[in-house]
Length: 486
Image 1 (tube, rainbow, N blue to C red):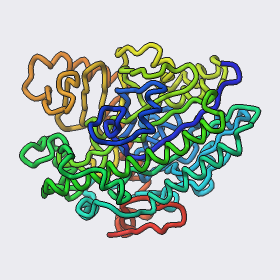
Image 2 (image 1 turned 180 degrees about the vertical axis):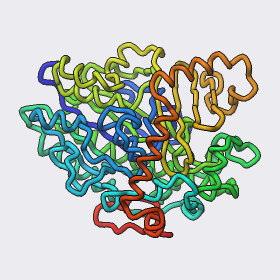
Image 3 (image 1 turned 120 degrees about the horizontal axis):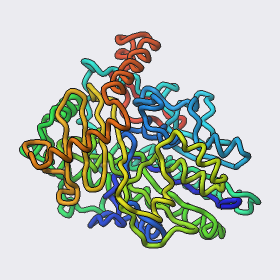
């Protein structure tokens, strides 16, 4: 690709794939993401490597599966020890900067960027240590944040506005660069707290909001992992219909606010004459359950949590196209390197031990003959679990608990678990299980995660010291003090 093109990578936090107009949501207003999708290719089967922040972002940065790099949860943050695409570009003399949320270790670590502008990193360089306790872990009480959802202001709203300002200024400063650059812009919204600017909250009347799949107690799936999550996070007492709708209105309003900030950055790109030589990638690190199956937050392998929006637009990308091929955030690694103009042989060498595939290549040959992996070893889980998406099938393998199997072509809401008394699906389940075991040994990865987490706890004074430190609900923005609670 010669000298390559500019790359603008926009990463949000906790944006569920379907909460966007371009993904056919009936009421969510995202005009700027919609126009980005209209000018490029929308990926309809994109997944996070792990439905929680730090492991997802470490996998995205390095192009490796979580079990290959050991950044298991929100208490073991990415520290730059495994080389990222940022390292590879910067060390070849490229301008590769970040603005906003990264959620890495910080504390002077070299994560690979030339500059990190107002980065949001984990608390104290360690993050959520309490999440490393997997056995008999203290419960997290998240009811208040759900019951208080609604209109208002938050540090995240202000931080994202400022990040859009910084991104526009950065583009202005680099509009006449002689060589292509890469800029990652990290927004926090629509991550909780579930607060939206009042005007955008009011855009979503409660009676217009559809309720999520299996939201009511009588429809909750009774899988033991989900039962444990509901108990662990204090969700086992069901929330009322209006509470669920109010949370959705706040969440959708935050999505629209995020879209507004993205629009400002895209407008600056166009006004500065940069759009014709810039590949734009939009993605989120994971989704949000919003009360589906009685769960709020991320954590599960259902699509509301594990699927992510992913849009690519720019030179050489088909406009208005839709790619149904399964893809993953680990695919960002080769995509950025290819777009930035690294020689094909260099990219191929870097990808020799990595599972990713260029999104540009996937868009050109959008077949479904690929399996993508997600895994979870973090807060609220007693043992690891793994999701494999292949064609229409989604297989979820739980260590020491029953598997799940869904046919998303006929059951996109994942209501009918074919692993339960569906003998005709046994052969599919066995095939999917074999494909998973070709990628990793689930039991071995689970043991490794738990051993690494135990060592992390011991390095920080042991179980009682970590419990005494307490938990915090959301990582603070730069300059904000974390609010710990026991």
